[in-house]
Structures are given as structure tokens and as C-alpha cells.
Image 1: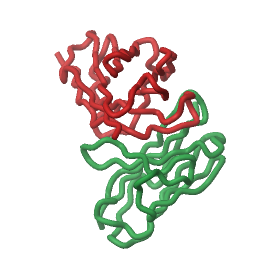
Image 2: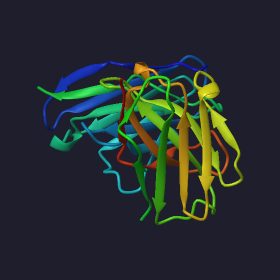
Image 3: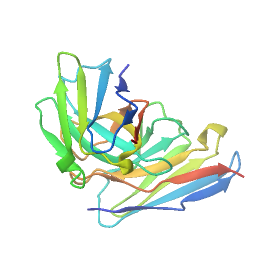
Length: 107
Length: 122
């Protein structure tokens, strides 16, 4: 199995901040890496697929980068609705797995 | 637009079978793609359970495979999860979702249901 490790597990930030979340794969997943946002009590929402492609309708303040084993999700200018939990997920093999999540809390 | 909605009993007894239905609207499941189930135990992360396509081809999480059955009813535009011999550790929110690719893997879940809370308790 490919293990996905996210860091940090949580962070505190303020509206307007730029934040970056890291996701590392235990082996290369090429660019088959997706990012989801989950607000409390809601379903996950696809933000970015294929490591860096913004899903339709997602604000441009979200961006993704990386390939192989190291990936990042950056939010440039946090908005109140961005305080949520973020998950990475690889789709490189038939056993897809998610990272443990990163929760962004209001400072 | 594509919408998914989970339904089923919210309470299941230990050792019994958990059965959930996902009803899809705005897209025919006969057309393409895989359709999957993902769960989230309370306060924890996401775990993929399994996925099925229009031909009945299935993929499962190996850790859950022996307890899971996936079925699709194209005439009703629904797909189903049966999860047998449940225990309290199977208590979770269960989501259904569309996998935006006709091949399993190398894709992403682009539409999700709102989730169904299932509690395993006697």
C-alpha cells in the first residue's frame, strides 16, 4: 500500500494568510494526487486533481504543486469559508488511499 | 447537475449486514465512470471501501474486501453497498461518490453524496 502523510495535522491561521499544506507519498505516485476540502458535517469537495489542476468552480486562491512523492496545497489569502479539513489522496494504484488530513483553524 | 444521495438504516446491530443505497440524479450510471463508497469514522479520516462500474467490474480495499458486496441497478440509477458482519468499529459516516474516470485508479472523486451516519450498536 502507498501511505500518504500530511503535515501539519493542524494549523492556526488568520483571514488573509497564505498557508501551505504538505502531502508525502511513501513511493512515487507521479502526478496522480488529488486534494479535497471537508467542512464540518459536510462531504469532501474536490479542489485539485492531477496534483495541480484546479477543479471547475474552485477559487483561484487554491493551488497545488508537486510530483513523485512530495506535494503541496497552497491557499493564498485565506477566506472565512476556508477553515476546514484538507485531505490528499493518491490514485496511482488500484488501492487508493487518503492522507490523515490537515485542519485549518482560526487563530 | 450530478447529485448523489445515500439512504439506509442509521442503526445496525453487531454481526448483522449494513446495507446502503446511493441514488444518482443528473447523470446515468450506465454511461460511464466508476461509482464508489468511502467511509469516515467519528473524528477520523477517509477510508475508501470499494467501487463499481457499469459493467459490474469492482475494486475493493483489500482490508475490507471479504465483507463487502457492491451491486448496481442501472434501471433505477442506483448502486448499493452491503457490508456484512459489522462491529462497532464500522460505525461511521458512509459516503457514495462518482469517480471521474472510466478506468479505475488515476482519477478522482468529483461528486459526493452528503453522507449517511451508520451506528453499529446492540
